[in-house]
Length: 178
Image (cartoon, rainbow, N blue to C red; front, side):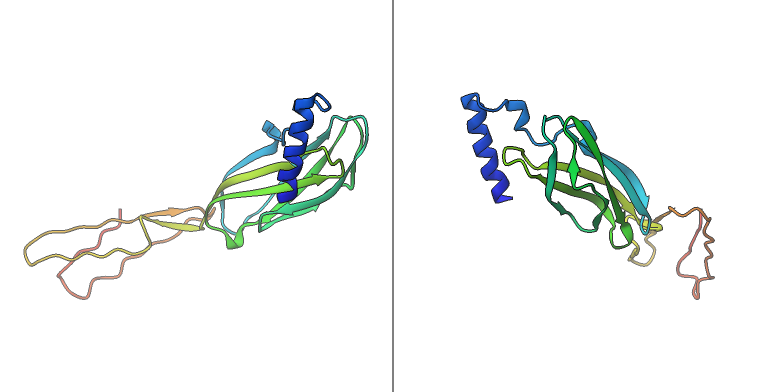
């Protein structure tokens, strides 16, 4: 990316001199360059396609790509025709993820004046069963002082879950399922 920053300075200078249009030097910041997948369940495989446009008069060769793990490029053409576009197909296995996710696909092009195109994929990966505020709770109290604690169990799976409470071994506490 240091080379990309160097190209950015060079193209900025060329734009200032009037040799290149300023709008040709900006990295891809279009609406199609960002995709929020919302919330998916951990273990799901996500696929999305980003369009890569070439508004120039010459075909562009894709010189290289960089991907945030666990993103994988499932389909990518070698060339983008002049005044044409191509689709970049990404896939992501969410098995190793949990929580907020932001990944990027950076595409470097053969034109030394072209900025790398940046495509962003964001969203949340939820575990199949989520326990909030955390998957454990602790209650401590003194004799005669009532205390309580609650947990919220969220099922992100299609099938319902069955919860059972075993009878407490002592009468010192009470468990309820609501």
